[in-house]
Image (cartoon, rainbow, N blue to C red; front, side, top):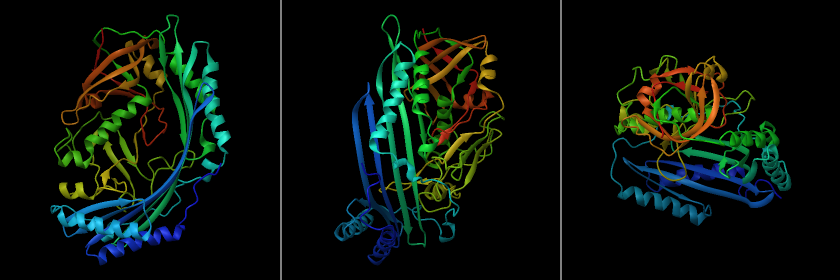
Length: 464
């Protein structure tokens, strides 16, 4: 089976096409213009009980155009890159701009602000398509088989999967910026089902993801870890409502950092939809909390993180931003629009798809690890709740109120004893971030947001 879909337009032509569309938009009446080209391909295979269930391969290419007519702006996108399709894209965007309301904060960044990192960020590796389809399917099958063979109580599976993707982005604008980068991804996962003596089922999953195949964990180790995680949920019960220390596993603690990012997002701030509005320079977390958003980071393997890029969605150079230092909120996360709204400067956090205005997104967002091992954190808990998964939303960024369904393991005298399910953990982000009393040393990036094991005191476990 072929790997990446061969482009019908040369690499040089795509960059030239983006620049040409910008020029044509200006000639047609735009005062500023910005074009983005995105192309990529994806492969995914899913097996269940050893049999191939789904097999997909697809490719896509499209262009988005954002135009300004003074303080009016609009955008349009197309997958038709023929001359006719491009002409319609330009005329459509300009027609929309003529009928939109003026916005005094609309506009592109200043010319001197544009730029991009020139060093190799190691985002693209061709080896994600180096294996034939049969071997990719075999990796998914092997992960599932390892889970099924791990223990006789693993009796079923929701499948094993292998996925790979490559992509390319080109951004050109009327203020002299022209940049591009490529990226790649591959991943393996499996979700086994464990059954207890009464026939009650529990499931869990595990995965590995990377920019290149050589950095993936082995399918066998993924399957075995998924099985261990499913088995530990057997015999789950509810616990009485009580106040106890809560220890968040890394898979869960990363969501707390994600909530803080959302609360510190410039869009939420200028809309007064965040409890962090007006809190710059104030203590918003415990003094042991340091949170960084780094778009330039390389992982220990020397490969760029999943949030690494040479420029943001508006063409500004990416950077490392300290969001919280020693518990003090240092900055909001901003694109150009939200920065103007707040009288500040962009932090290089603009994101965008082909259509619409830029949004705000994280790079590699993480909580700086501490010095305690997860085992040491657990050992210090006489009675508490180790949370391994969350359900639902239940987070109000305006008030900071936090309430989510949870499952995990009960801690007694520092040991993980029995499984817990069908409970709710509740508190407020304001207090939770102040009540982080222990930080693990186990920071591992499995995506673009990461945090180590965390102990949070003062929360409520609502159960039976």
